[in-house]
Length: 419
Image (cartoon, rainbow, N blue to C red):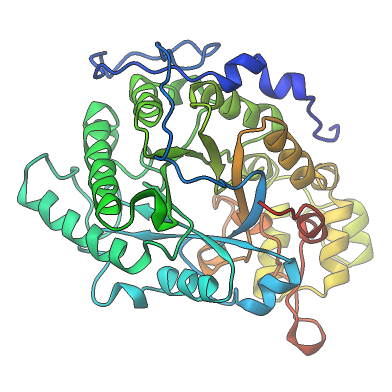
């Protein structure tokens, strides 16, 4: 396999004017939820976008790269962030009555972000509404229902704790994955649009754009698959475009290649207003890693470390989880595994592609191998554990307890820029 490289022309495939021209349709979405858009076209967003002067805070970040801990910040403290030269930190919080109870400032993701803010770092919090899983699994709260009223009261508690203390708040984490399949249509749109209007109104009553917290709509997934581009995703982007208080949209390109990540960018960027940008608060080649879990281990690695040459990649990773490798052994596992080694510059190449659009606000990459990545490890588990900057669950601690490092660590440091 050749090293993943992508030209700017391939990544964007849109004109400069398309990048800088916003278009919106103020009408509501009336299309059937069953139809799909053409895989070769970005969402049809018609009309000229009006300037949103004073609505989106000025001084928006430009091409920044930060650390993402998802729901689990355990072990990712000031020491680890300083070693990475990281200035941006991102996490998410589940916001449903079944998930979030008690003092919201003590919820682990919120507490970690408030601590990072206190340390002078910039922060992103994604509000997650996991109605397709977890203790609140079920239909989305209906408009005007008591259930929605209770949810909005819970949202207000979160907003009271974080507004002005997080730099970016995204409304929704992965909405099209966290909603029941039968509601991934205009039902989803109506729910999230109501949430967004509520958050916008709350912020308007507490400092507005001057509060220091920018608002984005949460992340779109599977845009590299034509089936993932639907009337509901089109309406999502129209809503972002025509809502002046929104600074942009988030994407999560977990893909098999840079070319597939480009499909996300090509779909989203042309829909943004001139004053809007996109986030990529999660991104990786995890779907590419997944394709190789049943490959045999590298013969060179097997010979050097006396490993059964018939052992599969997923089994060797499992060995490292059970008994973490010395750093040198993990490095050899990476460098001797051809399909992984040829992707070792992925972080650098993907960030270049994002930045070349001129529309990236912030991207955040996985920091630690968190517990959920290692638990229940088997040949069917998605190998998220290969993504992070730190290899803290597959590599033995170094001198002084320093965490093991993954191949992306030094790239991340080199990619830091003020944004």
